[in-house]
Image (cartoon, rainbow, N blue to C red):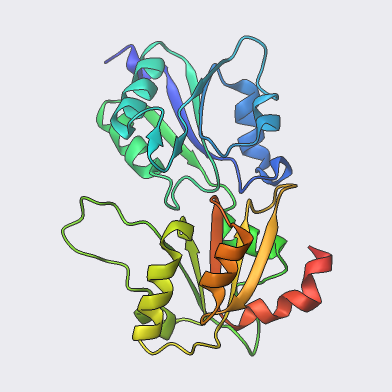
Length: 251
């Protein structure tokens, strides 16, 4: 354990896709790291900034295909830290927003390894902004919420109720929800949410391949199907979606 304390792990948010949206501190740590363990959605331009000789390890996950389990990632970070190395665990977006960075940091600290989180810009806000959609706007939206579209299967009970959330906030952003869009919309309609509620789907947010599909609650499932929307994408529910017509050219 004494040897482990010589290493240090940084849980770093890489931002939503555009490599220029990483923090100054996050970029500095990438350039200094001995080891970088990175996710699927991390921009390759950021990995190109690693110092010569740095070890790059892919630990990406996508629906139905995980390179490593979370337990394997935790153990890998511990192993590299125990070698006395400076390790950067590079997450897309923010590591504490559905990134499981907190699990990694708790595991490391429980094993005597120093761990520090470096926040990143979450796609829930940045992706919406790049599509010309603010999550709040004076006179239109004074509150917003972020929810996952894919709850962990081992939960004892369902915790995310989209219709109830939408009744409590002005804007709801759902991440990792494209595959569950039909059920999310159905639940909202059954909860009494206005079928004319504006909705936008932002695919591959902040990247050169970004595209946006807009509609209403009543027709967004059909529009998404016609457009062939694929993950990664975020879904934005709320009246601020209507501001896109005036803001998207500035994004």
